[in-house]
Structures are given as C-alpha cells and as structure tokens.
Amino acid sequence: MTERKEHHDNELGLGVSPSFAEDLGAIFGPPGQVPEDVDRAVAEAARRHLGRPPRKLWWVRWAVAAATTAAAVIVWTVGIPAVRAPAPHATQVAAEMNRADIDRNGRVDIIDAFQLARHIESASPTKRTWDINGDGLVNRDDVDQVARAAVRLNKGV
Image (tube, rainbow, N blue to C red; front, side, top):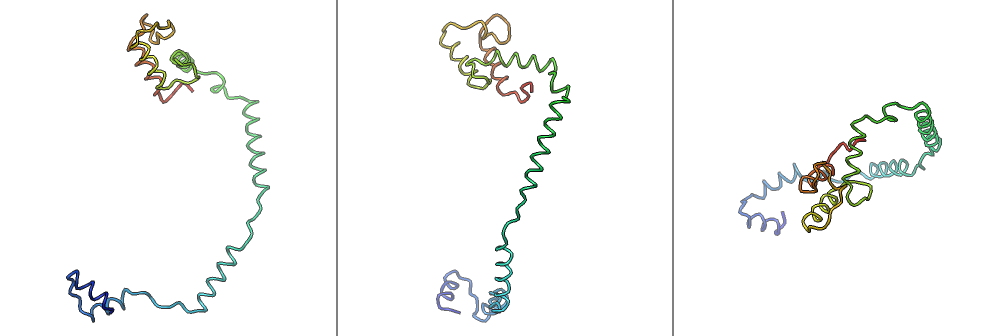
C-alpha cells in the first residue's frame, strides 16, 4: 500500500490494517490484464461489425410512401361521414371560438382574454361582438368565457 493511501486512511480514522487492505484489493481490485490475443479478437470483431456499409433500403421508403398515398386517396374518395359532417356541438363550439378570437389572428388564446380585460379596464369603447356570453354587456364574465375557450382541450375538432 502506498504512503499516500495509508495517510488518507489514517486521516479518515478508518484504522485499516495493511493486510486487510491488501485482501480487499485482491477481492475487489481490477481483474488484471486482458490477454493480448483476446484484445485483438474483440477489436477485429468490432472493426468487422462497425465497418460494414449501411444497407440501402430505398425500396422500403418508396413502398411506405406509396402505401400512405394510396390510403390517403382511398379515404379521400370514399370519405368518412363523421369527418365530413361535423356534429352540431362542434359547429356551436367553432362559432363560439370565432367570437372569442378578439385579436382576429385565427386562434383563441389567453392573449385574447387579456386584451378584452384591458379594454374593459381602460373604459374604452367596446365592440358588440365582444359580448361572448350574449347577456348584452361586455364585462368580466365575457373575459372568463374567452379564457375558458382558450384553455379548452376539445376545441371542436
């Protein structure tokens, strides 16, 4: 055992005897040297495996693309009634979402609720279309309605 190791052990107050430390080193120490022929064989196997050029599966990519296109054409021509005709509830949600889009950027987000709240707080003139809940007033209830529409998970799709 080296002096540095002994000094470190004594500094920590472990009180390990040199023979005990050697026994532990024999049990848990490094396994020793790898024989040169084994090392060469492993390195050669790795070179063979990693040096192999990648297989060209271009035909698989084309087959997947063709199958996807064919499926899209079939669905488009045959049609799925549930997709083509939205449910009445979905139409109602879409109309509500359109009214709640205060900044008219095509989506209802929390910025719309913030802008409506700012307009109400500043006492600036409000638009009649901002009456989201239909009670005849543009107030905090409408802001809450816009905020609920902004965080709704099912947006009518």
